Length: 345
Image 1 (cartoon, rainbow, N blue to C red):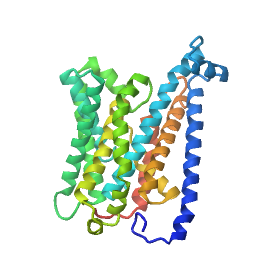
Image 2: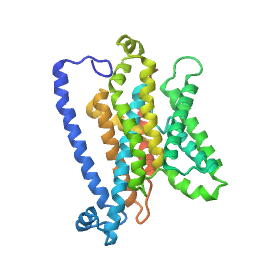
Image 3: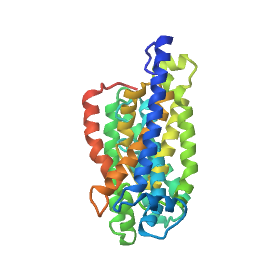
Image 4: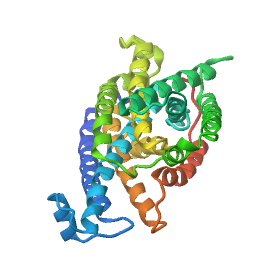
């Protein structure tokens, strides 16, 4: 039985496994090449000798200094992309909603609003305070959106969730502007972070956020079997011994942790969690035991690629990865809306 409830023969399952393994290998190779390109390409191209010298700890030239700055940036883009791709796949699985995305459902904007309130009203400065506050805001936004979409007749549908999330995102964005506008002392930093960027990354920032991303990663990957059960429908999942409400809550918790921690360090990055799972289903199918890790790898590849494009498309300036993902993700969103059937939870 596959994740979408369709039966498969043992022969088909055996035939599918080599193809899935091949795609994993391709994605790992692509990730390695993109990491190398991210270190070498930017507003200033650097030679191989400077890259090797910088990897050995030298910072004697401008090229070596540029490479030293790009290494943590590349690592952060890889981690953030993996987190958002994985979060998007789990959210689409737990809601059975093809439009589910941390940005479209208002989760990222909830995390952002919470951080802005903490900075503006409570002088928040600790890195861990940023992360915990963002996770709390992401969780509160998720509960709020789900509560709104559950009101009225019937169950929450993908359309109701998307509309509630879009309205919540707009409202939260307006509140962010209202809070930041009179505060010139924090406006510059907030605006730069608000776009969504991995620029200025340091290993200190990565070390702070890494435990949270690891916890979210483990919770999400361990939810793969639960998501396969939920894909069969609530009644069948319960008949298989799954506690439906608990399965949804724990899976959603993993997504909230990943989204909140990523937003705290990178700002809100939209549309990546929307398109990545749809692409990965074309590669490995709907079995979440394969879909989740492949979504994480694909998200990492795409965000690194977006960061590279953002560095070279407007030289000598840079565009944040949030701008690139929004530019590419908007047509993907329109395509999904036109192609996917609306199903109830």
